Length: 262
Length: 283
Image (cartoon, rainbow over the protein chains, first blue to last red):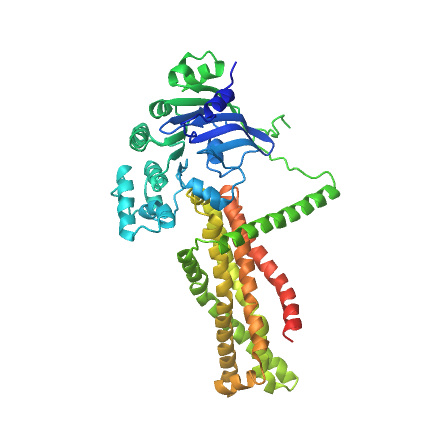
């Protein structure tokens, strides 16, 4: 029986006239203080595709995202972005790869000494030095309008709600027009209406920009709405990977239990 | 004790958790832990320093952040070091007058004050005051950024945090410490002279002329510019402690405290070496 890894590797094999997948995770292991969090996990994400990574708290979902963007390094295994293995890359070289990626943190991680506008302008100021100040301001306003926050640009992060902070985080992640978007629990802690708005926003951005996205969530409804493919993690392993219908038809006990409780 | 490591307390349900304290099995084990921790800390500091150095000398340069930090370290510390210098000037003046009078060497007062301030007290007082203000501030700011994932967000935005956050702050400390020391010295000499002039007539011109009589640049410049090393120590330790913080608000508090304590300690230890170095190379 083919494992998820075999399928991932087979799919990741370069074919003629076929570009490398945007994100490939190959047999990645990660432990913290002797506790294994990821247990040889393998996944891939192509252009325009959204993969939702589901699972209980503490199963290594957020760790997986941090490994993909290089904030942590795997104990073994490989992570490839556009076919380039990122293990051992120097910070500046990794920076070149990160310019093509956007990361939305679970707690937004906005710079608390900067206003909403300055937060979104931050990556542009550092990487788009060719932009004039007015061009940058226009771009920031456009990004904030896209996430529905054009009226709050001068507020400080502490003065806006959690949902608004996530929108600002999303606008900041989109500033450099990334090809890969990583979202860590984009709807966690939000009320149902705000969650639905964030889901709709992510869907809209995917339609318009055709990014490869990895969304970590424990919200099955949100995952079903925004992702074409879902991967369910348990104890560091991918239990099942496929569409929502695949999960529904699965006979695996953990999958049934997860769907029942969600 | 229950199998969960809790000690049940009568009358309370659920029982209050009692943390198990892991004690090393022997004094040798404790010493080994201490030894390991000591070398682990210095090893991490070495790696951190190398990353900062590499980030500092390669473009792009973060000029705007550097200017902001120069203002933060320099301008905003100026009132504090000026006041500390003024107080030290008065204290030294009072002590020197009393001591020199006892030995019939009152004429040596200007030179004693000038040399004490510029060679010894000015640099050390400036270093300790800046260590307290800037070290704690930097340590707490960076630690807070670390625990709220703001430093991760900077890195995820393809910006080198060692360049943006650490190199600029350390460089600002290195550049500003000598200038702040000059300000401290000036305030100390001014108030020292003033305290003396209040007791017996002594013109400022005469005080300066006598104080610096026969002095050479090599008597004062190395002592002033050695504070650049203090700046390196303060900036490096504050950034290192801040950027390696773990553990929420308690971690931020620890980082701020450790920044001040370690920077002050290393500053004084470094002074021992620097004084010997200056005596050898600038006799």
